[in-house]
Length: 128
Image 1 (cartoon, rainbow, N blue to C red):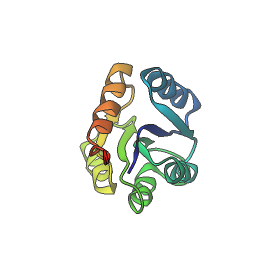
Image 2 (image 1 turned 120 degrees about the horizontal axis):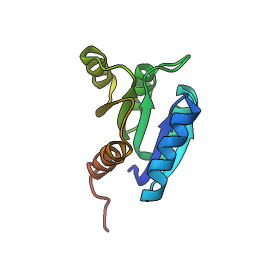
Image 3 (image 1 turned 45 degrees about the vertical axis):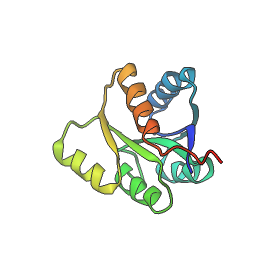
Image 4 (image 1 turned 90 degrees about the vertical axis):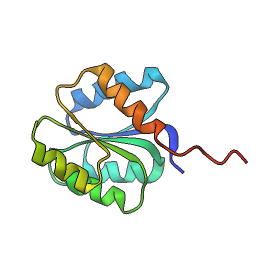
């Protein structure tokens, strides 16, 4: 069962990665950053996050391939983040396993709301 307050941020741009962390941590999320797809996959495997934000355009393993690999073992909700406003790319993101898609630049409030909404979609834990 994913950890409800854990978010993995997979983003190669250090400024955007830092911004996402600064948006989410004050709202109670424990954020685990990763700078590329392979380290992001490992962060998801270790942290079992409720939500993973995932940049589409990264060197090496892109966001689509990263999402497909994450889907092989995790139920984390995936929010794809991309600078491209393209219906085809959004469709490809969803086919790769994304639950939501957000374009850059984004408003901090919108990112936070989308992450919270995805975290809230998780089924409640077994209360005993």
